[in-house]
Length: 321
Image (tube, rainbow, N blue to C red):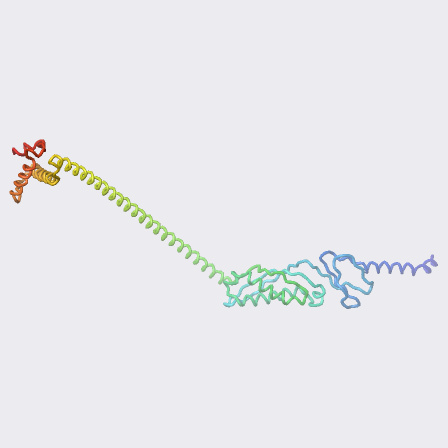
């Protein structure tokens, strides 16, 4: 047994060394990972996902980097706005390693460096804005912080994807003042809305009254037009009947239209005096009795034997009277 160990011990040792070397040289890198390999203390290469063989006792995996997107919490810090108001702001930073060897040799701790750079960049951006703008322009603030970080982190092999402000906390006194301001603004908007509603209501009432007045005037206008048209039609009817009567009388008087007109005028004259005498209690005497006698004589002259006009019913009564 001692002879076997003496003769074959070195072979066993050699086999153990070979196994250890194989274990040391075989490397499997996971997906979305990168291994930075050094050879004899110097950067040699980067191993990405897959199976790799290294030179035993010569090549060493110095750094292991994840190529996934990383989320870093940026602690709360106090920033001073342009109008000298102190606010506490915290946020979240999203970044990704693009060049693993730069992240290993460009900076000792890229995560810590990115957080510090995010805080300083945020203070610089907030210092350019007033307090109200810090609440209104979060997107602009985030974009400016990302641009500053991305330019500074490029030598580290890190790509800054985005930065998001988590919370902005002003002092208690400022919050109370802002609450009062917002309450006053809400009351102002409510008063404006109420006044605008009342104004619109008055406008609507005025418009309704205007429309009603226009409709009423149009109705009255149409009524007057209808009355005028009725009166015109009545006048035309009376005129037509009068003309027809005169034409018949003129035919009876030997086609003498002048005599017919005189006869009609004399009849109207006598009728009016007769109506006044019947309806009134006063005694009416013509201003010129000769005119009245002349009118009667004219009627008698027109209605004479041989003119072909028969006496009107009741004319004898008037003559007797």
